[in-house]
Image (cartoon, rainbow, N blue to C red; front, side, top):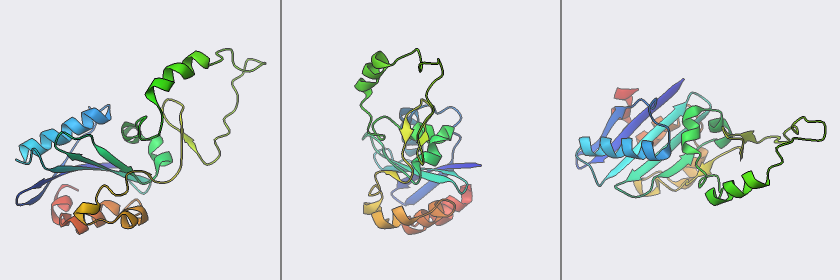
Length: 183
């Protein structure tokens, strides 16, 4: 089960709204959705946080400040890679993958498989594969300091587990009550 909410910081505090991510396909779409929510709340140049959570598996926070590029933190990248919403957040940049290298990788692929015609078995171990076959490391990924200026220390964000993390973050932000209204 998933939960997604937008928190927009306004002059009078935080405004929360639940959101559907069914039409969101990319991080850019998600950032546009956050900016629209900020405009509706009268906080166009202010901070908007997107909270995404898969019950007891992983959570993600996306921070959008005006027209700046979104900043992302994911509590467990490997778990998020198995989720359609998580895949939105696992961008090439976040995974440390050079988008220009993708074309070079495609040119270098041996499309004939192994000698017996079967593809090689994956030796991923504790790592997981994302939707397009890239290896995604387990554990936190992204910018753990993205909420530091709002009172959520990097060490605290890294220590939060899935399940209650979004409530704990909202508590520190002073937005627990507004988040609870959309839960």
